[in-house]
Length: 265
Image (tube, rainbow, N blue to C red; front, side, top):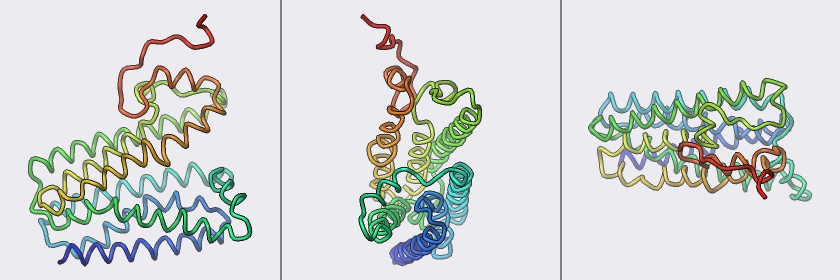
């Protein structure tokens, strides 16, 4: 019952927070404000759920702390990356296609949908608040979380430094973690949520939340993450096609040996 209550409260908080974020977006005239909120939303849900928890206190503290650390880092990273740039082209295209009421369409199709996805993906974090402790799967989850957080943080920093060098304009980052996967940040993000899932597996309700990390992984690898990003990169980075040929799309793997198509006969 307590889990159901915390889940209901978390859903309400997510919806209210998204509505507030939309109001801020209208004031800023930047619909991509939701991108910065994404990480903060998870942190907020974890903090709200904590008082409703009835499970093992160390487990609750660990899961809540890790969620806040992950969410705040992501929000800060996206804010620093985006605040000096123009509106995200995805939202520009939505406004152009929306007709007379672009705000209403974006609110329903982006903001409300993200609130529901955020809540659904957060279910392992909510379930862990009622877990029995950090067992074998929990320690494995911590290890997976650390690997994911490392991939995401290091990958983002490597990309930031690469883009900060004017000499790299139009070039493709293919060193560091980006040598082994085209999206170390997305891979890391997926690992983080599989880590949370394993931490929640000390009870059957936690184990039943397996669809949450699956949804996050699918979104990153096949949904609005990797496919949309790569579509634009193929247009703006001349060497990106060759990078795709030799580099794993998601899971880190040794680069494939191949010859650029332009050099083939």
